[in-house]
Length: 449
Image (cartoon, rainbow, N blue to C red; front, side, top):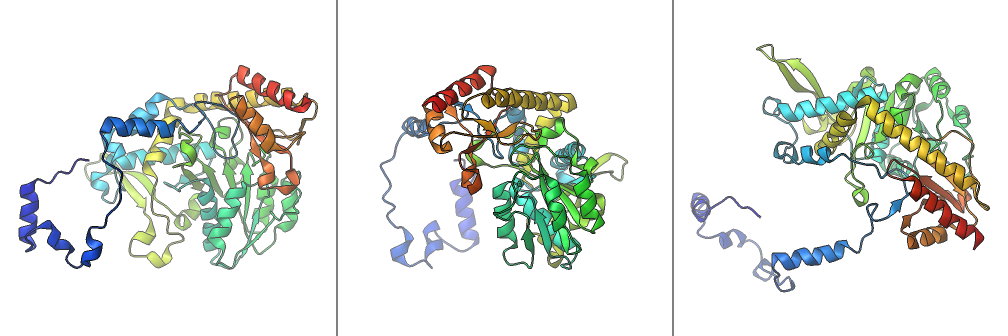
């Protein structure tokens, strides 16, 4: 660890505050608690520590070691080397929240570029910077809708095909609020399309939330549902997989008022669960109800291009009582990584990644559907995830897959009891034809076992 203060520096500081030695600063702490025995193991050399940490790391198996078909919200995508190289630059890696715009031009420009890219990708007018992950972004959308109607509308319709963990986070956020969450009850028909939500929308509805593609990988056009929500005066929110937007119609074209999403597929490593990135975009008319920060582009008094915090996190400043949320971190480094990723790929590169995901997933689905004992759960068009029914419990199948160095799909019975023996499989550009064929071969052995 680098500590910049010299002995002379410390002595000068102690003299200034009238203390002779460092230990005198701790006199207010009872003597028996000042320097407790920590019972630490004997000191080790740096080389020995590195070896021990490597031994611990080898106990983990990751998508680098296994063929990965596990998705359910976090996906194994390829990240260009330039992403990590750029975000490791000192001016980005150590930069803090830009409270002083005049000396934070680089950080503010990076945020502005990120916002511009996400706005273009989602088909929305403004994007903030940003939220913690896809789950908290959905919860913030619920907060925003409730604030927009000043508490006069208390119902929020959640699709049962919205990520189960996102719905759990929404419930944690709203547990003390007079908000009624409907639509995702245990008895909800999981195979039904968005039309099943139409009867739930009324004049008390503040927000309707769906996922695109949904948790089961299915792709729907939500235009009619958005129109129904607007006809009742409600807002419409779509939680997205951003990679899919390289190929599919944008939520903005469908009439979404709010678009949220998990930014992890945009150049963010799996990292055993985080840190990730919560995307949040909306229409300009709702911008003052949006949590987080908004960087803007202008000109300075010399006519030169300059960047500013157009809207800041209000809860940190003088109008805390007006804040719709206490979100305060702009996740700057992770947002920067996603901006670098999108910039490197560009419009055509992102479409190419999306097409690879789409075609490889459909190749896997077609092969698996031919196996005895396995069936595609839904005939609805899908992107890079799909559900198959299995002849035996998914946990047992995944154990056998792991024996063959394959990380299997998500066991849907964990969240949907009615989907016992159903597996959610994800396929990305990282899965080769050989890996898919091996998956099919091992699952075939399971069905014959």
